Amino acid sequence: MATETTTSTSACVDASGGAIGMPQLCPDWFTNQIFWLVIALLAIFFVLSKIALPRIAAVLAERSGTISNDLASAEDLKRKAVEAEEAYNKALADARAEAQSIAAQTRAEIKADLDDAIAKADAEIAAKAAEGEAKIAEIRAGAMESVSEVAKDVAAEIVTALGQTADAKTVGDAVAARLKG
Amino acid sequence: MADATDSGVAFDFKPMDQFIVKPLGGSAGDPVSMLTITNATLWLGISVLAIIALFVLGTRGRAIIPSRTQSVAELAYGFVYKMIEDVTGKDAVKYFPYIFTLFVFILFSNFLALIPMSFSPTSQIAVTAVLGFSVFFVITAIGFIKNGVSFLSLFWVSSAPLALRPVLALIEVISYFVRPVSHSVRLAGNVLAGHAVLKVFATFAASVLVAPVAILGVVGIFALEILVSAIQAYVFTILTCVYLKDALHPHH
Image 1 (tube, chains in turn blue, yellow):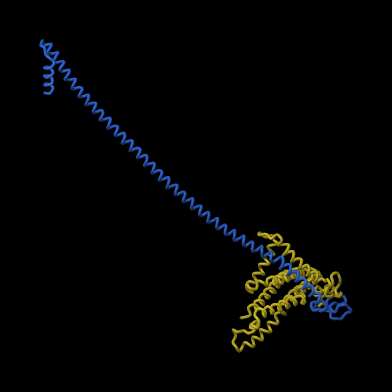
Image 2 (cartoon, rainbow over the protein chains, first blue to last red; image 1 turned 30 degrees about the vertical axis):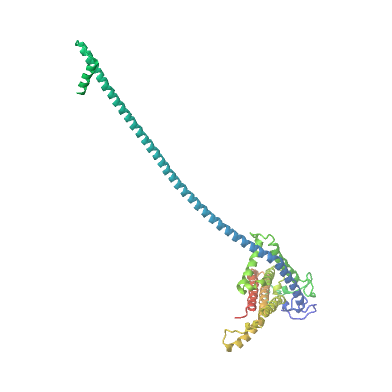
């Protein structure tokens, strides 16, 4: 480095405008540098601490709040989905059970109706049969009576035809005696 | 140094000229008083504006789903916040704005200094010394305010054998007072060296013969400087956190 002293106004700069030694160590410039440095640092500090840092802190806090809210609501929704699924399964099982009970009930009702109807039909059939039997018995009784009447008439006619007179009482007794026999 | 020649033309090495402070629009050597608007002022101002652009305009939307700029701002916020929490502890979170100011200022100054023809405030020992010594004095004050005289137990290593403790105390005291120096010189030295080396390579590029190698060198060193810019901002900040931890919890 050039070391010759010059007629420059500064002790740190030679005549051609080059640095003499290290410009960092030139005391002429210290106060200026320190003054402006302090101004710059104060400006940065006030801008940052009054505006920028609170703002960034607020944004970061808000973001973490939003994220944890979102996570919480996602958890909530997940829980709700599980609950809904459970409710759905429960409803499905209930419906199935109800359907089965309804089917069983219906089956029982139908069976009861059927039994009822069968019983009624049986009773009717029995009644009809009894009625028939009674009629038959009646008819049979009627027939027997007719037979004795016919026999009496026929016997009387035969007696008349043989030239005898027969009173109705005698003929009747004779026929009755015969029929008994 | 300027003896290397190429076709009879001497290289004009002026790697340090980029660090000259001069009035804005003036030339090197013009008088600079405290209030003069200088190139240093300009680039400090650009840093401030860039920081405002990222952290104020970029977060204007306050969006839950951030825009790209907003997520960069949030990333920087989260990075430093977590660093303080992890390194210093939860009780140091109230110092976050101060540490964050340091971090973004150094980060932006370092990166803006990579723009060709720019001025790099963090290469200036005046700047880094103010940063380093402010950190040192503030943290020492916090240490005494929070812990009173028991802050001095930081230097008294109670876990060491009694005979060794005075020696260790001496070493601890020396290392404590060297902290601001190393803190500021580390940053300035890294930035200064990188920029000076870039300039040297760029000067070599003036020669047709070595230009390809020189330009490759510039590209390589530039990439390295990008890394250094971020790392030095990180290192400065994390060391501040470590020192703050010592002040808040001085007992070993």
